[in-house]
Image 1: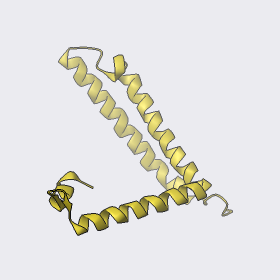
Image 2 (image 1 turned 135 degrees about the vertical axis):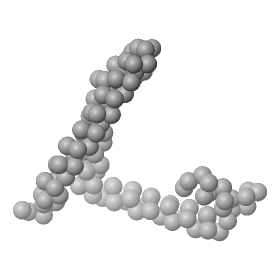
Image 3 (image 1 turned 30 degrees about the vertical axis):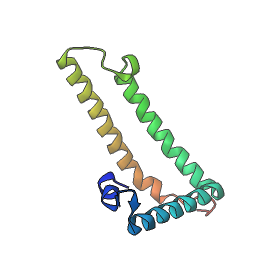
Image 4 (image 1 turned 45 degrees about the vertical axis):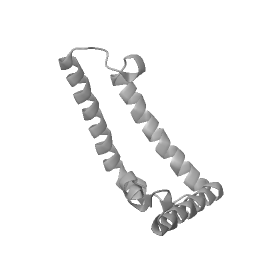
Length: 115
């Protein structure tokens, strides 16, 4: 939960009943998700594929920011601006490509449903 919201509900170490209810609800959602994750191979596969997409994007970021630990390779402000603009352009392009690919992904039948 966002800290300002939590701070409003927790004062003097006496937690507000609404905070307690929301926390219990969050635990229930987490438990449901974990049970679904353990039970459904399709969910595990979907999450893994999503993580692969993120890792591919991070690899592209590392390619552009090739300095030590992904830091800028130059101290010149102009060079840093070019690198950041390139990174933003690449990220926007990846988002656009993903947007174009979404209709095709949603039109496929779920695994095991035939089609």
